Image 1 (cartoon, one colour):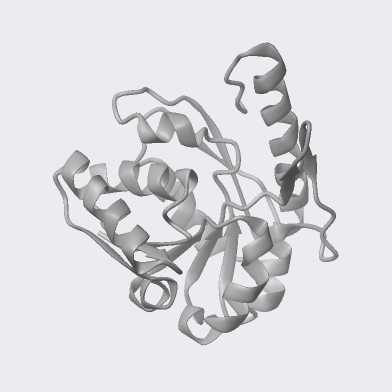
Image 2 (cartoon, one colour; image 1 turned 90 degrees about the vertical axis):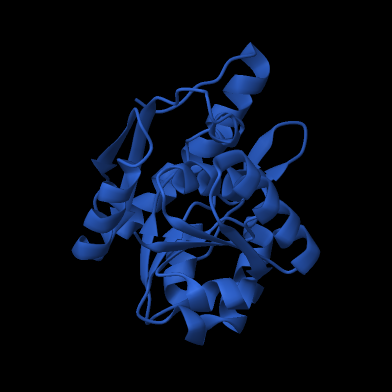
Length: 210
């Protein structure tokens, strides 16, 4: 099984995905700028999944991961990826990031490169960026007994990396992976996230892509 590392993995999305993949017997590394928080998150996931999960720094997580997930808020992305670029070379990097800000409602932040995933590819020219998991509820991921359904649209300019993540999606029961084409399409995936957040808020529902 692959070593899966989660940068900014103490947030809901990182912990949720880490929990589900720990259940499928992958080796999990939780990274954070706060070592105590990463160790606490790792300990909780270990107890809940009866597996060994390591909590460490973002740099150590980047070094240890075979596949590395970007799960921190967009505002922190550029600084972190620039600092650890060397550790991420020649690796598959999964961008789950949607560039949003929360005001009265969720709003999309305009990204010069077109999307957070495309920005990540510019910052990490020697890595293979794959955009995925934008529309899977972190709340539902964290509820291990909750059956998650819906589609995970996967986009990348690297066919082999995209196929690897499409296969990885199958580790979470009832999720279906859909080939979302080139990485440029990530801008459309990311723009759907604030729409779903606002629909969920206004209608008291949990909407997803299917």
